Structures are given as structure tokens and as C-alpha cells.
Length: 369
Image (cartoon, rainbow, N blue to C red):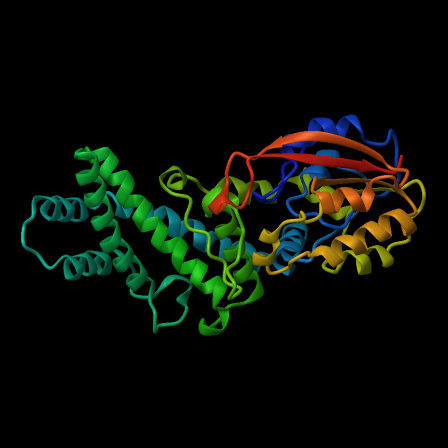
């Protein structure tokens, strides 16, 4: 095994925590590595194989792989803008004027809080909005409104707990409000690209990477309007930086792996039809799970898709495959008694988002070898 590489981004449902059991059940040898639902690619990076074919239905995800593979300069420039803004906003929480304004608000002093917050924000933020996007809704507006809400929330929690935050915790909470505003602003850009000018694909992918890394518990879910609606991760994300990740993207070993990898952005069936799959190849599959939560994903994978996948694997797949998927009655019926090797393992989820994920579930590891 070569030096282990890490995924390009945090990804919900990633298989990093299950690499041990996956590794224990891998074929002893294979020619090409094939992954139709690559996502964060935990297994792909772990194997660091010599010849790979990877695919995902998400255009932005596969563009990220492509930009890193080819060192797209525009993408890295856009990423630098986000990183620099993030660092600059971190300094805003140390502005003594913001701290003093909250102390006045806490003491009940009569003041025009919204106006004073806007004045502080306008002194701190450059005249041009972030990314030089639309001018109808400037970033300053997001930040001012978010800080007003944060002031009220901090005061409400202090009253509820009968506790006054010390200076360090106050700054920490105010920084979370400031950075939540930036996150919310870029999330709005991602959700409504038509309303923002100059939103190139490299810029959108840089924003996509940012919100994937900073959203709550790396969840990536959409509402019924097709808008990504997961909030900022909170105080614990304040000091997180994408600088190390950007430097990792330029590492020689990572570039060597991606150079030996063909990238696709297609439906899984179209993808496998485009590859000359041979018996000595190996396919790893980590498809979306059988859950109603998939309805909130832009690339929903419903029951009919699960049937298509099972039909392909059982009737058409020419190579060895390993499929990992959450156990449900529907999934179990698709694969049981089909001459496949099935291992059942426990899986614990540390986060249950809006009660849509059970914390303890069963995963099936399904193999044809």
C-alpha cells in the first residue's frame, strides 16, 4: 500500500470510519479500480491505485476533482478570496466597538443598535462586496442583520442561564455570528446563482467547497425548493481554515493519483457502459441510501434507481464488486438469495440531523466474490 491520501472534502456518509472492514474484504489483486458513486472518495484515496475510473452525479463535486487534478488557476484564485475573507472576518470579532456595543445593549442602555452595528460593519468591510457580486444585496447587509440577531440571541441565552459571558466567550460567540453571516451569504450565492453576476464555474465550485466544509456536521441537504439549507457549523468552526486543504490539493502524491484517474459526471449506468470493464477489475459502490431524506438531495436516488443498480450488479456486472449500503427491508430483498456474499455490520451515526438519521443502523457489505 502506498502512502495514504485523504479525501478532498468532508462528505456525509463517507467511509473513512469503515476502511478497516472494507480493507479486510478487498480482493487480493485487481487491475482497474472503478467507483460509480465516488462522493468524498475515502476508499479511492485509501487504495491510491495505479489506474482508476471514478464518477459522481454531482457536477460541482466532479469539477472539484478536475480542478485539483489539473491545477485550475481560476479555482485556486477564487479559493484564496474565500480564505482571505474568512481570516479578515475573524479579526472583526476583536473590534472593541462591537464588544462595547454589546455591553451597552446588555446593560439596557438606550441605543439604536441596528444603526450602530451597521456603522461598525461599514467601517470594517471594504466598499466592494465579497466576490464583487450583486450590489442589490451586499454582504454588509447580511453581516449587519446577522449581528443584530446574534446580539439578541446571546442576551436571551444569558438571561435563560442567568450567566454573563466573559470577554473570551463573548468574542467567540460574536465571531460565530460574523462568520455565520459570511457562510449564509455564500450559501445564498450558491442557491441563487442567477441573481449574482460573474458566477463562473470555478467560483461556484470554490463556494461549494466552502459551504460543504463549514456547514453543520458536513450535512448536504436541500429543501423542497432545491435550496441548500443546512446552517453554519457554529463556534467550533470559527478557527477552521481551508489553507491547509488548499496546500494539500497541490501535493505531488495527490496529483499523481488524479493523473492516473479518469473522471466522469454521469448516471451510474451510463458511466459503467462507457468503460471496458474486465473480470480482473474491481468496483466499489457506496450509493445513496434507501431513505426519504434523499428527496432533499438535488440528485435524488429513489427506489427505481436502487432497482436499476441491483439489476446491473446481479445480471450485468463483469468484475468483482463490493457494495456498502444501509440495511432496509427493501434493500435486503433486492440482494438476498442472489448468490452474493453479504456481511452485516453495525454503524453508529454521531449526528442525527432533524431526526432524519437513526443513530444506530445496520450496513450491508455485499460482494460477488
